Image (cartoon, rainbow, N blue to C red; front, side, top):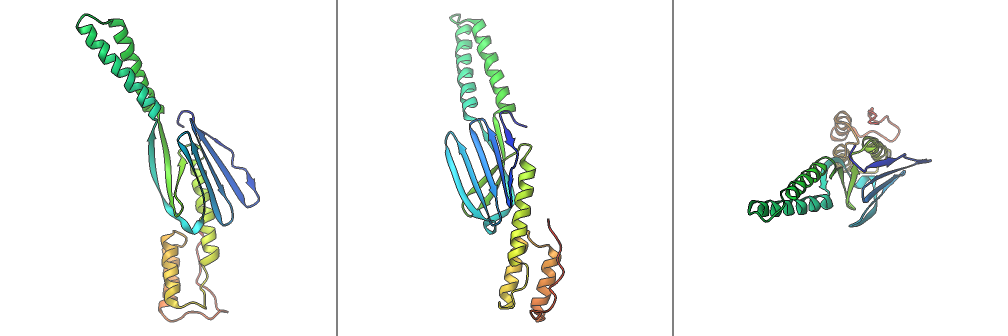
Length: 214
């Protein structure tokens, strides 16, 4: 776990889950309910907040590493003074001990920057903006909860064949569900076979078997 980062327990309020991640100068809050996600990222540089439906959440996640600008600036400044003092020492006008102290301090700061000055996140693209999820001990739990709720909502709303819709429109729906990782390739093939083969079942007939993704 990276320095200065912690997560608070995820309280559950009935059908709602809330996660809070905190680091040095930033806080992430994610609330998952039946139909949508409420997201908030607050830092010293600003705040991003939005609510988005599960249908508008990309199933794939990326990665992002943000350097700590304060540590980087401090280390560069001290390194600069160390170089200046070293030049003065070489010309006989500087203090060798001070140059060594500054150089050692700069080295220590750069080491601290390398070890603790990076903020690692997973990124999830949505229609309302990008979500950041810190790579801490709660990271995997948050991703699992988000995936489970998203898949559950999509399957609950769109899995069954709509007999009032045209077969080609239903096929487009199942193509989209597969792209959203809400149905398996096997399920997609079963629905596509029924729709393309002109065997769209009557309302009372059995739907193709499905596989749970939870």
